[in-house]
Image (tube, rainbow, N blue to C red; front, side):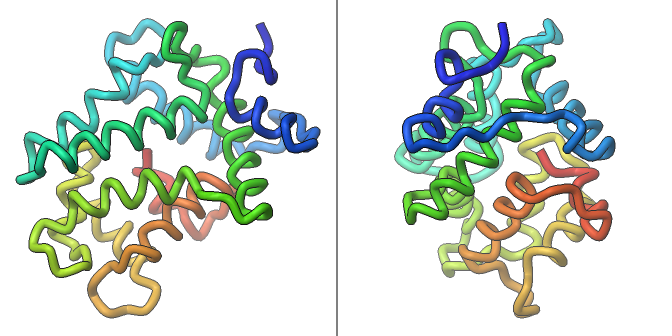
Length: 206
């Protein structure tokens, strides 16, 4: 069954505000296709070709094991992950099939652009901020490269990816990531077309 407003939350949102955007796989760069499928396979823990919410919730629960997070922080992170991936097409009952993953990502990106144009809350910021609150282990209001390594470990991403991430995200070159810098990095990754200058980030990011 093709994705549309009857079975995908981002399509439903777009149609509700009069946006008639349509997916064309030819608009997706081959390297982005490769990266997206690689991330799907990471999330598909039982390798059945379908991503479900129980598998998604493994990742915030894993953060609890790696940092001294409070129950409130973990619950906030779980809710942000649930909302984010529901809008990326992971149905709470039926999950999301591998063959629909790329389209689900692209329609989510268009929905985020629409929310941005309309001055509405960003789901990317919701997710980024929930993880930021947990990563800021020393409570100084910033995230350093060692704290960022924790997120890399939580997502089973090579630790060296933290340095690539950090270099791209630290736009003011202070050696610390402020909240908007991490949101910007997440937004660029999920919303913008493939950029070869970001290959180092695309290679690792979920």
